[in-house]
Amino acid sequence: MTSSTDSLPQTRHIATAIPGPASAALHCKREAHVTSGFGVAMPVFINRASGGILEDVDGNRIIDFASGIAVTSVGAVNARVQAQVAAQMARFTHTCFMVTEYDSFTQVAAWLNAHIPGDFEKRTALFSTGAEAVENAVKIARAATGRKRVLVFDDAYHGRSLLTMAMTAKVNPYKKNFGPFPDEVFRAPTATRLWARAGEEATAATALAEVEALLKANDPETFAAMVIEPIQGEGGFLVPAPGFLGGLRELATKYGIVLVMDEIQTGMGRTGKLFASEHEGVAGDLTLTAKALAGGLPLSAVTGRAELMNAPHAGGLGGTYAGNPVACAAAMGVFETFEDGTLLKNALAIEATAREVLQPLVHSTAIIAEFRGRGAMLAVEFADKTTLEPRADLAAQVAASCHRQGVLVLVCGTYGNVIRLLPPLVIGPELLRDGLDVLREAILAANEGQSDTASASALAVV
Ligand SMILES: *Cc1c(COP(=O)(O)O)cnc(C)c1O
Image 1 (tube, rainbow, N blue to C red):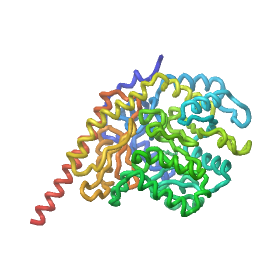
Image 2 (image 1 turned 45 degrees about the vertical axis):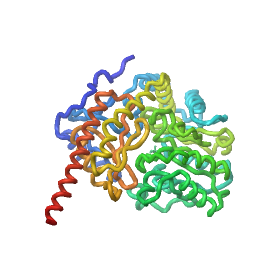
Image 3 (image 1 turned 135 degrees about the vertical axis):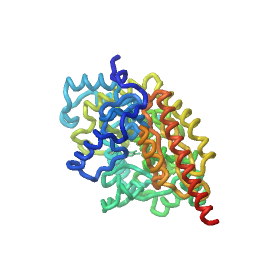
Image 4 (image 1 turned 180 degrees about the vertical axis):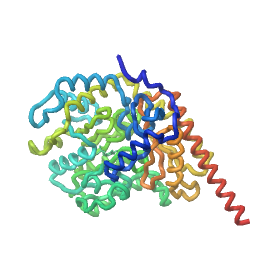
C-alpha cells in the first residue's frame, strides 16, 4: 500500500525559530484577508503532515499532540482513506442525498448501527459538523417525546451554533457577545474533579441527587433530552466518577427522557474503545459522532433507537452537504483502518507511556493537580496544589514552551488551566516519548520558576 507517510521522517526537527519566517509572512497575509474572529493555538502554516508529524513551511517537523482536535486519529495521511476518497472523487463529488441517493451513505449508517453501544434496533442520520449532530439530536428527541426542554451539564461543550452555544457552559470565548440564545436549556452538575475545588467529594451519588432534584423542580416530564459527553472535552478532559453515566441512564429511563451521548470528541477509538461510553457499559438512546469519523473530512452522525430516529416527519431532517459522498468514502477508509484492532491497542499503549512520564509529576511538583483521561485522551491540570486554585498562566507558559520546541499541545478547561494530549493513534513510540519528554521538562521548568518566585518572596519578607 503506498502512502506518503514514508516520505515524511517521523522525528522532531527544528529548522528555524517557531514560528519561522515563512509562517510569519503567511500569518501577516492572513491578517489582511481573514477575519480576526478565529484564534490560533500555534501560528505555523503546515506544508505536509503524516503519522505524528506536522511539517511547516519553514521545514520544522512538529510533533502533533492535537490531531486537529481529535480528528486525524487514523493519521492525517491514511492510505485507506486516500484510496476510498480518490475512488469516490473519480466517480462524483456530490448529489445531495435528499435529491438522489448513493449507497455509501447507507453503508456508513450500517457500520455505525452495528458498532455504537445499545442492544436495540438502530437508525442513523448523517450530517457534516458536530454542532449539527447535536442540534439534530435535540430535534429528534423533541419530535419523539413531544417535550421541549434539554438538560446539559457543567463544563459541557457541544458546539458554536446558537442552540449548541446555549448548551455549552464556558462563556469566554464561545458565547460572549453572541446571545440571546434559545431557551429551555437547563444545566446540572457532574461528578467530576472540579467539585473537589468547592470542597465537595465528586461521587456519583451526590451529583446524581442534584441532577434529579433539578429535574423534579422543573417537572421531569417536560424534558426531551439530556445530553452528556462521556468524558468532557473542552471542559478539561473531565472523567466522571464511576457510576455517574449509569445513574444518568437510570434517571433518563425513569422519566422518559432521551439520553444523548455526545461522543464527538471521545468516539472512534480515542479512549481505547471505539466509544467511551463502553468503559461504563452505558448506551445512549442517541449517540453522536463527528471529529475522527471521516479522517479529516467533514462528517457527523446521530445514531440511535429506530423508533426515535424515525419520529421526525420525512423531509424534517437533512442538509445540502449532509453525508457528503466523499466524506462517506473517507469514513469507510476509517472503518477499514479500525478493523484489525491495532489502533485501539495503540490508544492504550499511548496512555501507558504518557502515564509513566507524566503521572509522577503530580507528586514531584507543586503545580499539577491531576493527570487524567483515558486512552489517547489525556490531560494535565495546572493548579496550586494546596488551594487547588486554577493556574491558566502556567498551562499557557508550558504550552508556549512546548510550541517553541516543536511540540504541539492544546490548552483546554473551563478555567483554561489544562493541557490536553490528543496524538494521532498512529504516532510511533519514539516520537511519542520525545514529545512527552519535552512536555515534562517544560513542566519541571515551570515548577522551578514557581519555587524560585516563592523563595524570592520569602527572602524579600526576611
Ligand atoms: C467538537 C465538539 C462538538 C462540535 O463539533 P463541531 O464539528 O466543531 O461543530 C460537539 N461536542 C463535542 C463533545 C465536541 O468535542
